[in-house]
Image (cartoon, rainbow, N blue to C red; front, top):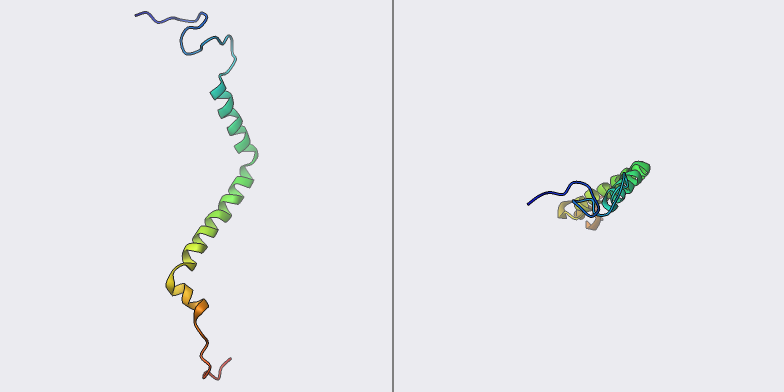
Length: 79
């Protein structure tokens, strides 16, 4: 079996001619351009998301939860 080089419809390039990038290449380039543009905002949101998940995990443990549900000792003279 012979491989076709160039020509119309041959190889992976399909019917594209010249330096026209493929659809997947253009999509990946747009994603990378967006990430470079919004890098700070993405990191900002990720920071708060991670902080929220850590806080939620800590507060769901029973030993930390007792702080919030423990009834105050009424016989204690110290306020």
